[in-house]
Image 1 (cartoon, one colour):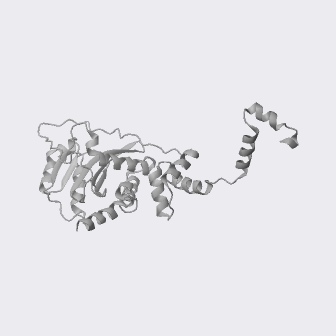
Image 2 (cartoon, rainbow, N blue to C red):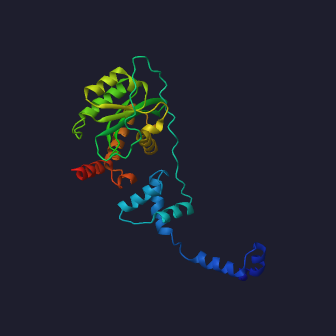
Image 3 (cartoon, helix red, strand yellow):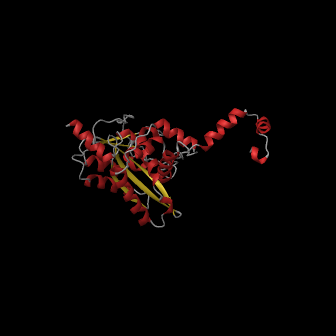
Length: 282
């Protein structure tokens, strides 16, 4: 600046900074950015996650690559470089059909006891809608509360009883399940789950029904969580046909069960965690 005929002292006075402070800033500005390499790694993971990864997911991905990084550093770098995680919105889907007199409800056996120690003893189930190409599809899922594993699912273009009945048929065909007798299956009080046909199907499998209290979506939080992750991770709105959406859903279910580690599952995938629980209880 002095070579250009500028008075540094005068400029510092105008900017309300000390001369020594200016020189300290000048020295630091010429030093290499200490966070640069870590920033490049975190930014790559963050972008691959479509700006939806928080520090936990980023740390797990770094661990998977053999890189150990403190969570405070990850949070600091994210804040420093403006990597703001997108927060998913609450699912607005509500079952609006009214129950008839022949429909039945059941007690809340689960009672928000989401920390289940044994796999394949307590399942939860629900339906969500997926808008695509000016149409709607309906996804029915059964999830193991202990392991987080998706045990059965069915995608339908129609919100008929078939969407839940086919899901239960798929559950019955799941070869990884040793026995469905006395397994609890928890749902909300929606039309499908209070329907006599569904109740009969569950009873014939010797399973036990449990239901959330009316209007309490938190009672079925594991399913709300899964649908949130699904809608975050899957580009379902870009699908042009139902068949394309079904293939995308099938790929994600495999990814979720076998490839996607979860923080609250000791950083394991659901299938790996299920096997871990089975070995621990043997």
